[in-house]
Length: 162
Image (tube, rainbow, N blue to C red):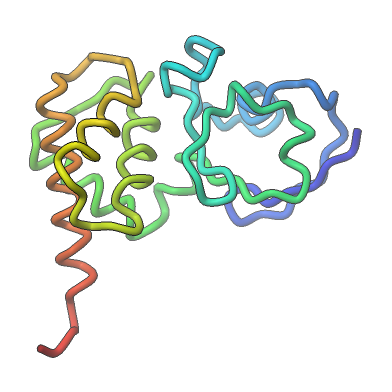
């Protein structure tokens, strides 16, 4: 099946098995290893991508679902000012996630703070529970999300006149 979609701001056309999982397509056909297959049931969060602007488990999507969509992987997201906010938040919290879950933790954080840079504590906790790798403490991940939201607020307020 020939499918076309946008991947990290590039237009893509590829002939692939429509049942091939998106996580495998990204890794094998495009050498984008940030989305990592973990549980392959959509529970662990390590295969997170932005699919049409929403954090999504790429292990749950067959390739044909990509048709006409916009996909952003961690490799594309790292080029954005939003990534810099999250990176600052993670550094401030002293959080250094492993390579297996780092991309997912970044994208989950973005998914939470992109429209609301002042998330409630329960929203932060729900987001922190969305990635099951515990290479870092749960508390440091919660702090990292909070600090990333603060960095985003500060960047958003730069240049505003009161």
